[in-house]
Amino acid sequence: MRVFSDRQTDPRRSTTVAPSKNQRSVFLGRLSLPERNYLADALRTETVGGVLLLVAAVAALIWANTPVRESYETVRSFHLGPGSLGLNLSVQHWAADGLLAVFFFVAGIELKRELVAGELRDPKAAILPVVAALCGMAMPAIVYALTASAGGGSLGGWAVPTATDIAFALAVLAVIGTALPSALRAFLLTLAVVDDLFAILIIAVFFTSKLNFAALGFAVVGLAVFWVLLRKGVRGWYVYVPLAVVNWALMYNSGVHATIAGVAMGLMLRCTRRDGEEHSPGEHIEHLVRPLSAGLAVPLFALFSAGVAVSGGALSDVFSRPETLGVVLGLVVGKAVGVFGGTWAAARFTRAELNPDLKWPDVLAVASLAGIGFTVSLLIGELAFSGDAVLTGEVKAAVLVGSLIAAVLSGTLLKLRDNKYKRLCEEEDRDEDEDGIPDIYEQDNPDYHLRMAAKYEAKAAAHRKLAEVAAGRTTSDDGPA
Image (cartoon, rainbow, N blue to C red; front, top):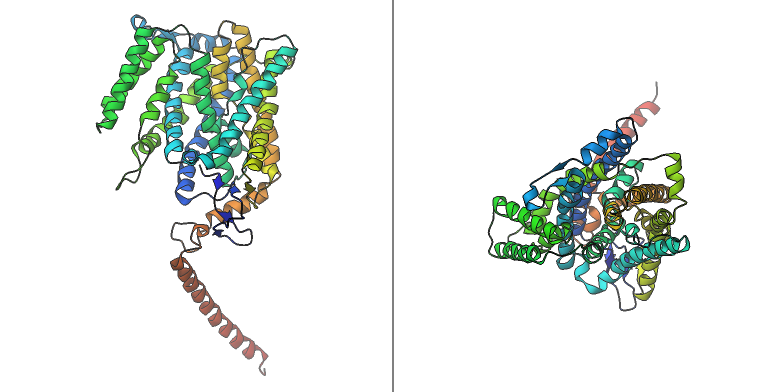
């Protein structure tokens, strides 16, 4: 996503001008048209998925806190699958290890696209969002560690508050009705992509159980076969879907978290376009699979993971137990301070100027929005405290509470600038010549100005005729009776 531009926006006009040697690069500058279109398509799906995710989380909480809560436990603890293959898993386990593999598959494609065709392909442009994301993961971990240590709690949950849930964040924007300029949305999505990358590494390195090297070896062979078939141009879902399932099963039995298989296969897809291609294979597959991930896989995971008992005592425990308080403070304080501080420091280091249409409080609002850490935070919470069911439930409650506080805080900050955002979005979307391309991207196109001139000349001619008619009426009215 283009969040760091080498072109400057002239605040007096809707044009971009090439920088001189003495001009600085622009942070959160205007996106290129292809990036803007890709962003709009991706976020449209994520927003719908985020609303479904929100509904699923609320449904899980209601289900787990009503007289039928025993049925909730019965359903998510129900086991199914071939035991001979080591896959006789509970419904909750299938959701966490199976359905989330689809989510991480999409994350892998998204990351690959960013590395080869998006913001992260240019080291200079990647510095700022990467530094912001790293600080936005390091600071919550530090806040958690300090809080847990001060209270004598376990340090095992340090990674829980480090992730950002882009779908849930967009759902919050949809619910509160806040317009957000595309540059800020791109910045948020880039943060989430880098977050996903490091969350994957955290899961692979810190939450890998005892390794089964035979299964791991076969998983590597399966991934190699997947890669070779892609490079040979073999097509057909009936080839890749069964192979993907086999690779996932082997990875699960190897002791490495099964979602790593999804990431690995996503990273193998080609995300650069060749001559004659409207979309790369990676973009095409992402377009097909993203609705499945956002609309089904992640909401079902939320349904079977977010159901925790909520009571006055449980909520007070969230703020009194060091592990849970560390999660809440990590999401609310650590994320905001880390993302904003990292962004500001990186901008100073790279001598980047903030887009004159935006202010640093806008960056703080987005940094606060990044504190909504739902899907991956719940997953890491389950992994971090898998031996303690009570603490796992309390940490999940802390993730929900922290995400809710971050949502309210960021929503309030964004609402304060909502009128400004709406004007910026209207300017980005304006298409007066009705050619399907926003006018802001056609300021250097002579044909655009000729079309607009013809349009205004036609309007002027119509108004001249109306003026003549009105003048004739005035003369008639002023004449003798």
